[in-house]
Image 1: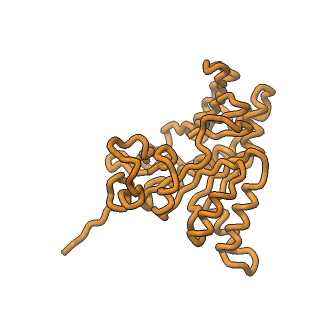
Image 2: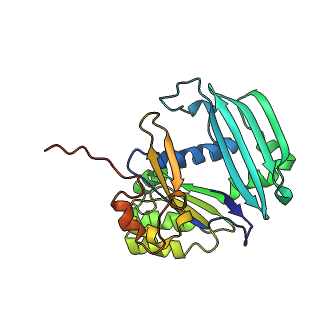
Image 3: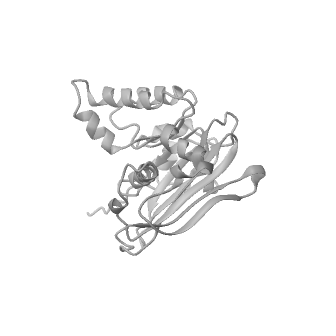
Amino acid sequence: MIFSMRGKYSPVLNTAVIYGPNGSGKSNLIRAMAFMKDLVLHHTDISTIKPHKACGDTQESKFLMQIMIDEVRYAYGFTVKEKHITEEFLYWFPDGKETMIFEQDGLSDELTLSDIAEGEKAYRFFRDQLMIYDNDHLQADSDDGEESDGIRKLNALMSLMQGEDRVLIADGLDTGLHPLLVRKLLHMRDGTQLIFTAYEAGLMDYFTKDAVWFTELKENTKETDLYSLLELKGVRDDISYSRAYLRGCFGAVPRFDICS
């Protein structure tokens, strides 16, 4: 997935939905993006990162995000190992060719994107355009006011979508909302790029194959496999994606051990 800002005709998805069973890594994907944003903006401590249990504390964790800004693709990322940043880099692709803006190695406790003039556009994306709604917001919304959880969530999502060229990443967009309200939200984007996780299978029938994604946990490594419907061979365009998904045709569904 590539995020876009100020690119009216950018060749990127304006909406994408991610499906998968409980425990397959959907929320972890959102948490990784939230951690990346918070670390760029110096809103979190590097020591809060928790490597995957199967990897141990010495395993590297690499974060990479690609962004379209003014029709040009940027790639920003960093690597974390043993509570330290060991690598940070920013590339851009004018005329489609990869060009390094900056790259640095060595141990550090803070990212430097905000301090580098050439990285201003990428930094502004994290600060002003990238909006994330996750389970932390759900809890905060539940603790505030007398309105229902669903109404508070709806208002919060609509507020995050207000602004020029925003990208909204939402975990469990359909949780606690009436299906008709979810569909209304999808039509109210008004230029906001929307990427979200969901459980309501019927929503996927509103999207093209490249906009429907799945997460599935690999049994041997416990890693999350993220793949799109477009990558699966033999899926016809004239079928109901939701019915096929619920029959298990695309994977990424719960597995039940049924005892007779």
